[in-house]
Length: 211
Image (tube, rainbow, N blue to C red; front, side):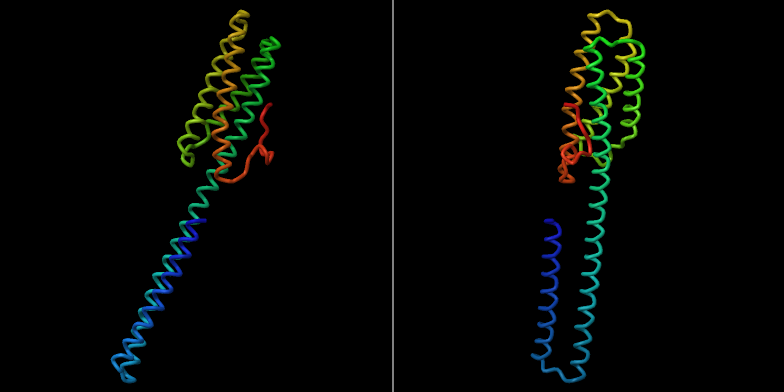
């Protein structure tokens, strides 16, 4: 909005200067008491100057429009990417909470771990496809941390089937710590989406997070 106001202000200034210049040139013509022939040449010169100034103003206007379009496309691309991340992240948090509930109930059978591998493997695939080119440093760092967490979680699952109960308790605590870290980094992404779009994805029911 500030940029648009600045552009509008520059246009008004340019128009005022053009009118002032034309008045000065006409006044100069009157001052030198030009005859009809000289006035014709003088008016033609003024017209040429006005045409040049109009051309410059048109180019500036086109460049301003292109800049606004580029900025809009960049914001739109960033917002879409952030929304995709929040959707995948909310899915990850939901699966983490379900996994924690299973761990607390001591449901550590082979089928359960097969389901968890499938869930988190799919999350890993979705996160891996995300490009960081439109994201700020904090968001990119948060997504990278979440991706590392998911891959570490997959490795943990592979080595936890059939282990002793003490190791299972440690695994439960690890799951809880992972869920806390994921929630923290997800907040960074959600805040970035809200800052760009003015929309809270949770309040707008674009995503749902576990309680």
